[in-house]
Image 1 (cartoon, rainbow, N blue to C red):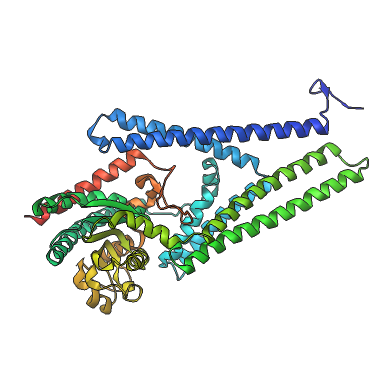
Image 2 (tube, rainbow, N blue to C red):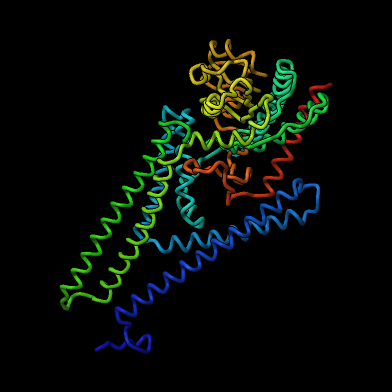
Length: 495
């Protein structure tokens, strides 16, 4: 006989009713998630087409920019609602585990910055990418709770640093444009023509295309040559060597193992609940145990879906030749011509991106046609990391160095090398150049918003993906700023 619930004016719901209601709620959330995902994708595609059509939105009506911003906000709101619903379907243990993983990763980041390996750019980027991946699965309204205590800055001193950092970036553009002009002249003298194809490497070089454009307009017009084809290239460096391929597959297999362990633990909890239900007894809340068993089953189904998805990715990774995917993209760009190719990057740390490109170009048999440029580079590391590339094929706007051997080998290929004053970074100018080389141009601090794209290192595709963080206003402002810097640099070159 059912007990009467005086608060609800009726009986207590049976275990069947509770389970049914719980499943109905899950189904409603899943349907809403699918609806939001579909609507956001359609809106994104339409927004991006509009932005492509309005190439220079700053020259038109402000209503265009307002319309784009409005659509992006609507899309972001839909994606955030879908994420919140997905998060709510997880168990409390899963949610806490994800948040703890973020805190642990941020602690790892801080320990790296404060430790002896703080200059290890590769490791910093690995941690940064892993942290971004973790945060992407947690609703933004919870991010603030996961932030470490803010670093204390002297307000005036920090503001002065930010201002100097921007000025240093401006100066790097000036040196870079001058060095690019020299490189183009060298290529023209050697081959009888300017480059037919210009490649901008990876996502972080995209805003710099607008700094380079004024120089290209001038130089190609003077030479009477058609403007070059300009392309953005996703190097996907983690997937272009056997070692890196094993690294990515190993990482995915580790995720599968963790999920499988959690699935096993959840199965055990469900079996325990079912045994308790079967055993019965007056002290057992059968309704609650039944609901718990159903919740465990729902969790198992979700985990099995995630495991299956990861296993599909591993199978795809193991059956696909990623170097060929990368070369296929390069084929699309350069094999319809026989002229020189010029690759532009924002910065070179260990030389990894250039190394990946050089490997692909070598296998394609076009290595001799390619020259490389970076606005700023740690030329010390290039001695060991890029020994296979002719120094005359490399050039840099600014070369940061503390090594006489590096300066002897690459000094003539740099537009500017900051004067060395010691290893204590006591001089602002020296410190700022090192910081720019270490962190990259200022827009990197908000790179996805400014470039509008995100690169998934484990993606099999040839192209980057649109970022949900993109901000069309910031994109437009950054493009106009770098274009203005480029025009100033070209004007300073004279005729």
